[in-house]
Image (cartoon, rainbow, N blue to C red; front, side, top):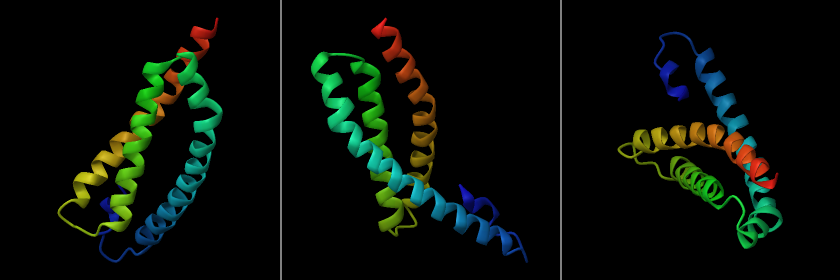
Amino acid sequence: MSDWQKDVAGDEIWQQIAANLLMVHGGMAMLALLLLGALIPLHVQRSWRSGQNLGSGSVMAAINAVLIMTAFGLYYLGSEAVRPFMSWIHLGAGFALAMMLPLHVWLGRRARR
């Protein structure tokens, strides 16, 4: 996503901003993985056993799995043929997760009432 400004002539500031944003993004992703790891025994397993909010919870787990796989691919696989495709999938999954999280919470709270 930050690649759109990398070809601007004479403006290295965009490259520096993009690099810094990617570092922040990577750091936040590591924190998200820690939280996701804590959610599995504390929230996911308990909800799965009780049969609560299985549909949206499964979608949330799948989206997170796609994000993890595409992040791994973007970081470790250097293939320029696959990178744009994987980048768009990662971007779409990130937006899907941002939209799905409030829906998942809302559905869970509605079912609890």
